[in-house]
Image 1 (cartoon, helix red, strand yellow):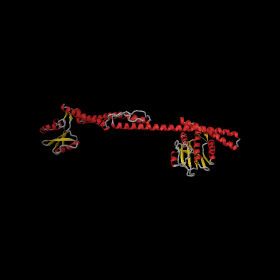
Image 2: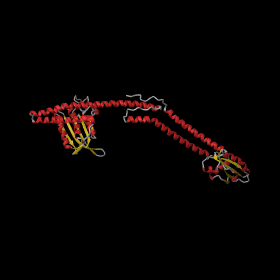
Image 3: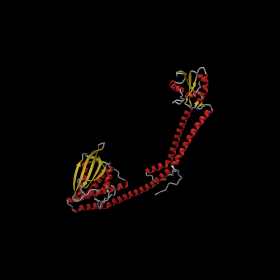
Image 4: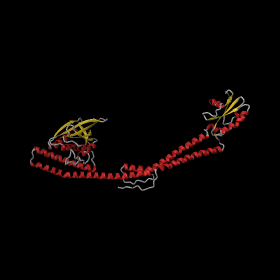
Length: 462
């Protein structure tokens, strides 16, 4: 097992990696603010923009002229100011302040210097009237055209600055994300390879401390998974070797049984004895087929061969074999068929072997003189109303232990509890469960409340 395949590399914490981009963003914002202030100062120095107090100075300079003039006219009003002329009773005589602002202008006569909208007021007292000048203390363009069509220079620079800052944030985020993705490439690649069980590879190092720690953990996980899978593969290989050895060893006694059965035909058998010898020969041939199939499954896997099966003839065939198994221990067989289908689709040989494995287990664990119940019924289930066949074998033995109910279908499982037998190799229910799954069905294990024994049910689609 390889460990420590990641080379040592100088690393920095992720916080410092992030701080570099934050510093870039912070310096960029400072540069934008400084540029905006510099541009504003240049505009002021080049007289393109009036300073914020320019309108106030104009109002003060114009106050004397307005006070001495015989009549207030628009020519006397500074270009950055608006005006209104009130008589002593507050009636408007002249001016260009909109109607909504007249109340605030008159309040200025009463002593108010500004309003809620940010305007400031300067009041010029004349003999029988008041001239009120309104202005804003904000920078403004010198050009009347720019003042008319553009927002104030401070608003324009603020909007431009905010746009540049937003653009700077987006660029920084994109650069950070791109760089972080590059830093994560090794991590993503390692995770993908481990997911696909490609465990022979070297994990690249990272200069980010947290990512490097995750990569080291993934490298340890890769090595541990590789070791675990190798152990599992070796265990599976040993199991296959055991099955092949067992299947191969079975060939010799089966050949001897068949050969001796053939010799018995020449000994003058009675009709009943001849029937027994026929049964021995027939089932020894079937067992040889089973052994051959078992070897094929173990070596290369088994290819399902579906065919249309006549239900009545199949149940009769299984029933005859069940009776042959039961007669040895004087076990009585009770059959109950509630099957509507006259035919169904299955692999006849595979299904027969699976059911006989189930039946053999039942006979093995049923005491002499006991009973076995062989039941078949059809059911319709799920949203598509598909039809299923349920093949059930129930015995009158001691039933499954709690442990066996969980593990009896596992390969080479041998229960050391209520259903233990010296000749049990732990492959019967495993093969039956495998056959059920190959048919798209399931195998169910339970203990019968009626008999107290075990009940095994195979469910397959028709």
